[in-house]
Structures are given as structure tokens and as C-alpha cells.
Length: 294
Image 1 (tube, rainbow, N blue to C red):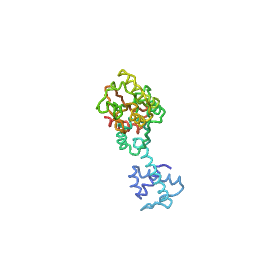
Image 2: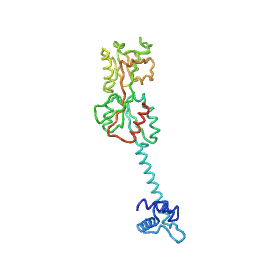
Image 3: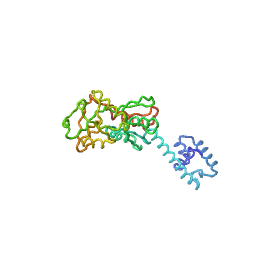
Image 4: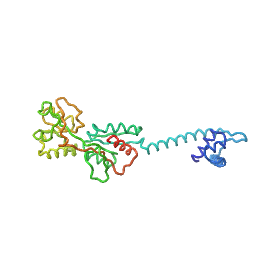
């Protein structure tokens, strides 16, 4: 039994005329009759009653018609499902992000991506470390991820998202709290509140290198494993905390955030993804990202 034979039964039931059914199917009338006869012979029953004036379905022919239409509808649904998947309208995409990505352009990208791939399942994970993100990409656990550095691994490609500036969180009574811009060199004698390095080595090293470029070694007085913990330490007057500018919208009583001079400290954010991962869903996501980023 072939799908074409089921289509013949379906169309013949609609038209109840061999000539019209053949034209609708784009075949000759003898070819239609031949396929119908083969199906009846295979099933061992007569599906159509033929007279010189009309044709009609037999009782079993009506039942076969119902089953044929269900099968054809299922095939059509399968074709739509596959077409949607190949076009990237459906599927499952796993995106890893640093905190700076979550508070940066990623929400706008996801909003537009949802319009392009409306029936996709989006899974968003959070990590503080670019190395962890890269391992997830290489293992296939992540389709793409926001990272702070371009990988040396030839299996990983990157798309630049933005050049990011930084802010410094200060106690509200700090001598520089009313400034609109601070140079990193002005903070040479401050106590610092940092992340644990194992939670984000790229960010940690970026801050250390930035301070050294200004001619001083930062005096790390306290560590916090979350931004909230670090800001609590800042509010307590224990030190100052440098964070990505995208975090400036986060407020904490007893602290103020002041932009750092971008000439002193800035860094890029990138989308990283596997070179050989060319799923239509990922391609849609990256295309939307390029449009939003401009």
C-alpha cells in the first residue's frame, strides 16, 4: 500500500468521477484505474462500485477512506513539523549567559528571536565564567553562550555583541560618590570587593590587569560570591566594587554607582558557538542577534 493509492481513494471519493479525479491528481484515467485495482487486489476487497453512470464507495471503501484521510492528515502534519524544524521555527535552543549578558542586549535579542521562531523552546542558563561556557559549547550542552573572550579553540566561532564599559559601586558617603565619571587610577588606594576567581576567572583577571595597567595592584579586602553579597560589603564600607556597566541599574541602599572612564577599562562581550553547529534554529538566533546588535 502506497500513499499515492490512498490519495487516489481520497480524491475519487470527493469527485465520484474517474475523469475528474484523474485530472485533479495529474494522471491519466487508465493509470488511476490501474492503481485502484492494485490496491483492491492487495486488500482483497472492492472499494468502489462501478456502473456505467456512476461510482460509489462500498461499505468497506468508506472505512478505508476514513483511515486513508487520517493517514494523509498525519503525513501532512509530519511534513509541516519537518518544514518548521528545517526553517528554524521550532526546536530547542540552549543559551548560556554571563550576568552582563542577562542585563545587556540578550533580552532584546530573545524578544525578536521569539517572533522569528515562535514555537521554539528557549532554555537560558547562567554562569559567571567564560571557560565554563566554552566547555558547555564544545560538549554540546550549550548551542551558544555569552563570553568575555575569543576562544583559541578553532572549533569555536564568535560573534561580537558589544564593547562594554564599567562602573564602580561606592559607599554612599564615599569621597567620590557625587562624581559623574571616575578614572581607574583615582581608585589606586581603595580597598576592593572582588568575586572569587573560580567563579569568573575572565572577569577577575580583567580587573586585575586593568588596575595593573594604571600602575597599581588592587588591595582585595573582601570577596563575595554574588553581586548582592558584594554590594552589601560595599554598603558596609569595607571596599569598592567594579562591575559591568549593565549592572548599574541594580540598586542597593547605602551604595552609589559611578561610571569608570572607558579609556581605562572596557571589554567586549561575544556570542560563542560551535563551528559545526549549523542548526536552522541557531542560525535564526545569530541572524536576529546581528540585526539587533547592528
